[in-house]
Image (cartoon, rainbow, N blue to C red; front, top):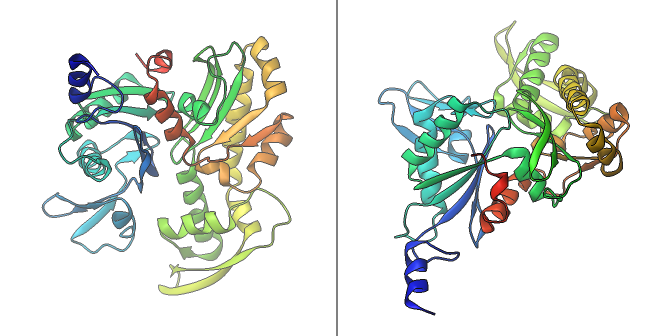
Length: 349
């Protein structure tokens, strides 16, 4: 190996460099995933930060912070620094990312990393600036951006560079992204700020209205995971504990999946309607491709039982759930990161 090549590897000029690190981040409302070049996914943590209410200092982040949701005393507050896919608390986001960087680094004395971050397709210039600033303050030496639907499409193996239409529906924690992809770009898209968080909120609101039961965010998420469905005929159930706000005492009720299905009607209908609007915006030539190729579901919301069959019924199109709906976005970003020259057209300029 020549001297020039050795120096390039030492300072981060090539793949597998000794001192530099390149990473891809899926900075989500619910979870943050980190992909390290040549290593794969090295971190998957909830996007939650625990803050000292008095000093304002960050106490902990990730799983430890999520365990504190609804359980903190007056001294601490567990918060989500992102809402609907965008940063709402810049300081908390920066601190969270800095800790995630430290947990992800495999080389103690490596240089500041180059970061490829996934962002919603409908992100504004102001929101882009907020993402760049947070990552740079957290320690990134260079920030590259890619739209989440494009990264998801690469992650599930769709031919994004081909002159053919491929449709992705990414149901995340804060947003649902619908995109038709062709020739390394988004030919048509629709984005709504409805996702897994709204499903949780709908469950909590339903139990409050019909059972006078107050539950926290963690409990509503557990109910969604265990009983969440849009299909009829499912008769699963679980016991849910919370606070009876009429009597002011803790109570436990047996909740059935059909009650959860009723609770989820409104946000699920919004997602279905957004998919319809995305199809309406699709150019005719690409629409014919989607009839043949169908739609790919990604994101945590794709795990909602029966959502694929519901969309198939409503659109008349083949629907396929990604094999790895929770991680395909960051995996796609990782593939892009490994071959930036090939996928340079996918990046947000």
